[in-house]
Length: 224
Ligand code: SF4
Image 1 (tube, rainbow, N blue to C red):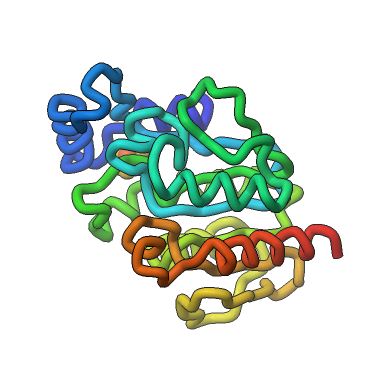
Image 2: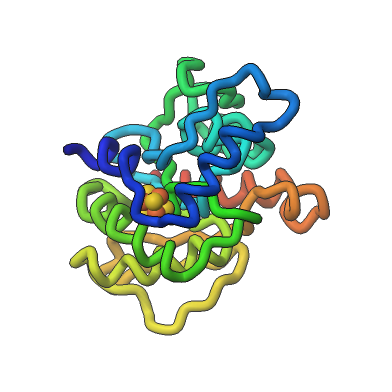
């Protein structure tokens, strides 16, 4: 089975499998006529990216509904718009999985492939899902920039990294919006941003200007 097929079929986390099913039953009023995806959500983008964006998990009524990462909710609206404005996406909006949108030189993934209650995964769920991220990182031979969205994605990515065989990052890195880290052989730059969740964008903790600046930084890394 391909990585995509294994993620879609995965049922390793009982709490998340149950929660997915519950969302499919209850839905949100605006989407009552939608058939929710409610399975693991695979990565999206070019097969061999130079930029990998790493988020937390599918949104309950976003990717968990549409089946494509960051598609169909407010976080995705911020992410795809920023990627479009910096040349990493063919369009600014991601509405559903067959909307024709394509990424350019980039791929988007999550450290957890199934939606967790309250957007709060437990450590065991992140541990179970990490091998998929390790496999991705091993596969992407042209990778130059990894962008971690939020602290959970940042920490989980750094736990996955030593298992990939790639040169390490410095030990003990802490999450900080806007930080940049290079691995020991200077082949990969890790950029760090707040997650574009409504909690961060509605409060002004993350502005469009600051978010776009991170992607412009990724662009300049790729062009260096
Ligand atoms: S979160 Fe990951 S490991 Fe857990 S059921 Fe979903 S795909 Fe499987």
